[in-house]
Structure formats: structure tokens, C-alpha cells
Length: 501
Image (spheres, rainbow, N blue to C red):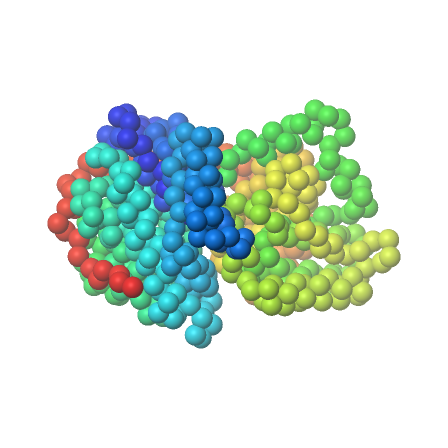
């Protein structure tokens, strides 16, 4: 599903240091993400969310008139319960997610899409149609002075469509996922249309410098030295809201014996390695298993003295905002089964080789994504493995650092390929997940790190996480927006290949 938000009220959009003369904000993204963004930006700019409610009766065996009646009831209910929400429905032709997920998101995470999957003209048509229908929806709610914020890869064509429909509009793109190298991007048959679509924006912001650089290189390769003319690109990383995690830890501390302390007892008082990931090809769960096995093989003195808890998030509570992708959309049932089979194989091998009846070396479990459910796990950890093979933002690393505020100041082991590596690198041990022996050596360094060094690394990372929160992201975004609004209009300057179905 997808959504947008807008406001026609007259007010100002302000940052921490300046005021931006915008009347409102239009946000386009998935429904949950748009609502999250609107909530984050609400203290600074008025927002009204427009959500795609989907084809709610499509698979219920109803007639066309019955489907229409049910959808209308849902629309009326949403409007009544949420006055600031303007719900819409997309046509069947606009709801093909194959191109967005199996092609764009797969390739952006440096994995080539399967041959013949998603490259079909029909899949591309669905992607174009979805962008066209959202462009029409924005035109209906847009008021002069509003700013349009487009969020992520589902709407790469939309900025240019909106530029052509509303030439004077101020358009911002926040690229929340990974942006690939120019060599990977060039694989896309529709690369010119996609890049031209993005370049219809006035401002494009990225999660990390690496993605900023790779986008600029791609523009130079495909568009020439003047490809970025009139477009401002900036690094504006999203953070994690510290409040829910810190609140959970304070509640546990005030209630006597904390949940995380009880969990440590259940794990036999051993040194605890923890990792929390979605079930996806990017999470690198098998790589962690291999590294942990190498660690025990190289250092047998730690057998029965350490335990690895690998938690997998598989339910709908996981926020797309921080997981880079919905793993259920990226992996087919067969692929998911194959990945889980591989993980179960590693778990069985490690426990067979190093475990005992009363003390398994590895625990693999599924958990819901809630601060209440995950905070004890993060807090009890001595070492947290946030070692995906590719991601834009490591929410698990942030959550671990926040939860460790009231516990034992554990060590963060972070992937070099995470978009959070540059931000948190000074407070973590950096690893290449593909180098199993070096990864295992980092685990040994982590369990042997002095208490003083652990405290110093945690203090650095904690300061960063609490300072660069979601609220800081909102203020930085609006500051960049203010810079754009003070520059001459781009009306009449945009050219490029217009996508067509």
C-alpha cells in the first residue's frame, strides 16, 4: 500500500534555526511509513495523510457492485476515524509490486534480479501506472505553497511527473534505502526513465555518504557532467526514536528485577551474543552462524561459556521504515524456506558440535517487533551482531545502544556494508561479514574488551543515537528544504525521458 499527506492550511514549516515559507507538506510512501513520517514532522509542519486502502474486497468472491460498496464503507470509516486522512484506492493495474520489490529493491541491494522476472513490459506498466495515479492524487490535494516529499524507490518516476503537472511545486525526495553503484544501476533497462524521474526533484536526501556518492556518480555516467544541474543532494540520515526503548528500560528498572536480568539467568549466566534481523537475503544470518562457529573452533575455551541468540522478525509488526524492505515481498515462499533451512542447518551443526543438552550454543527464535518484546534481549547482550550484508540503516544497532544505557555497556559489532557504519563506526567493531575468520577474531576481541573501552565506545554511540534521532532528521530535512526554497525556481528547467506504459 502507499500513501501521501498534505495540508492546505496556511502556516510555516520551521527548522531549529530558520523558518521555511511552506504552507504544508505532501508525503508519498507506503501507508505505515507515511504515517510515521507525518507524526515525526507534525511539530514542524502541518500534514494530512492520504492512504491507499487497497482493493479490500478483491479476493472475497464479491460482485463488482458489492466490492465498490465495501470499499466505500472502508473509505467512509477511515475518514470518520481519522479526519486528517484522505484515503484513496489504486486500480488493479497500478498494484503490481513485482517491479518495485523483485527488481528495484533486489538490485539496489547489490543482487541481480532473476532473468525474466519483473523485467516484463507488464510489470513496468504497473509501476508506471502506480506513479501516474499518485501524481493525480497529489494534484487533487496540492495547494500553492505546499512542499511535496517523495519517500523511496516505489516512486522514482513521480518527481518528474509532478514537475510537469505542477511546474512551480517544491519537490523533495528522501532516499531511505541503499543506492547502488553506477554499474549495478545500469543493469536496469528503464534506467534513463527512472533517473530522469528522480531528477525532477529540487532536493534529494540520502541516508549515508556512500549512497550520496553513488547517486552522483550514476548521474554523471548516464546524464553527463550537467546531470545534476538544479538539483540539490544532501545527506540527511534518519534515526530511531529513543523514547520507547528508554522508557521500557526505565520501567524494568523501577519494577525490581529487570526482564533482561531474568533472561541472563535463563541463559545460564554465560556471555551473550545477540542478533535481531528480518528473514531476508540481506540480513546475513548464515554469515553470523559461520563466524560464530569459527570463533568456537579457534577458541574452544569459550565452549559452554558463550551463547548466541539469533532472533528473527517475521510478523507484520516490523516497520518497513527501518527494515529496508518487507522480507515477505522480497523472498518467495520457496526462497524463504531455503534460507530458513540453511539457518536451521547451521544451528543444528553448531549445537551438535559445541552444545550440550542443558546448554545450547545457539538459540534461534522468532519475535514480534516491539520495544517491549525486544528491549530485554538487547539489554542482556554482551555483544550485538548488526552485520547485514547490505542495508541503509541498522535499527538494531541503535536499539541495542539505547537499551544498554541501563545494563552492561555491551559491544556492538557492525557490518562495513551498513549505511550506519560511518555514523556508529567509532563506537563499534567493524567487520566484513564475508570474511569469516576476521569476523570471528572480532567476536574474540569483543568478549575480551576492557570495561573502560566498552564504556567509552558505548558513550560515543549513545550520544550519537540520542542526538541524531528521528526529530533531528526532521529538523535537518527542513533546514535543507529552507535552502532550496531560497534558490530560484526550476520551472522550465526540467527535461528528461518521460516514462510511458
